[in-house]
Image 1 (tube, rainbow, N blue to C red):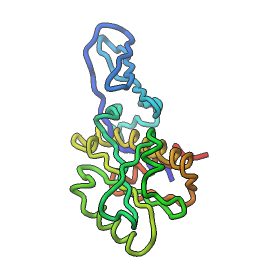
Image 2 (cartoon, rainbow, N blue to C red; image 1 turned 180 degrees about the vertical axis):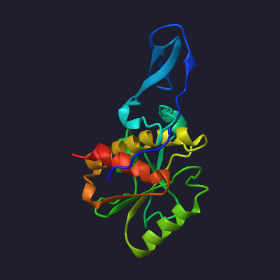
Image 3 (tube, one colour; image 1 turned 90 degrees about the vertical axis):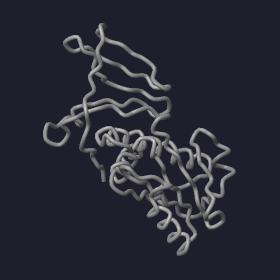
Image 4 (cartoon, rainbow, N blue to C red; image 1 turned 90 degrees about the horizontal axis):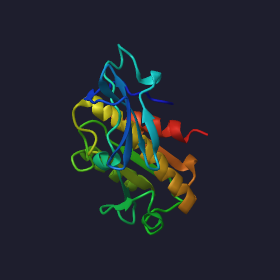
Length: 210
């Protein structure tokens, strides 16, 4: 099921030229001029692709404000792996670092559960994720991956909703890395999201759709 994010904000930036591309923390931000004002149009991020505000994200009633996602460095999506072998100390998985995956305690024979928080939450301040992780490991041999994107889920809410698109793309990138390096099967993966985390799950699923 595809979840749609419901709130954005349009940021206006003063400028003198009609079209400009600039780098922001390894992201390319393209801007177009409207009545002498530069309006962010699209942002492209290495490995993740481009994000733009298309007709799908424009709605006077449901999305009165529209903004582009912040950069990857700011959002700082982290994947923290817990297993029965290491139930309290996590291995951090990095999609672009094969060794972080191959040398982790992740067992490709076990089902994998992703747990992702929402607005104003985190792996540290959201005890529900730790409790859920512990319950899973108590009842079965799972790979539990807690997703922390607390760098990008702060107010204003419309910016956090925009950032969920990047987190969904980060999940897609990691899942493809897990498939490549450990031969994990998508049928054995389950993304559990709360609040904006459910939107993130929807974006990840949509990007992974065949």
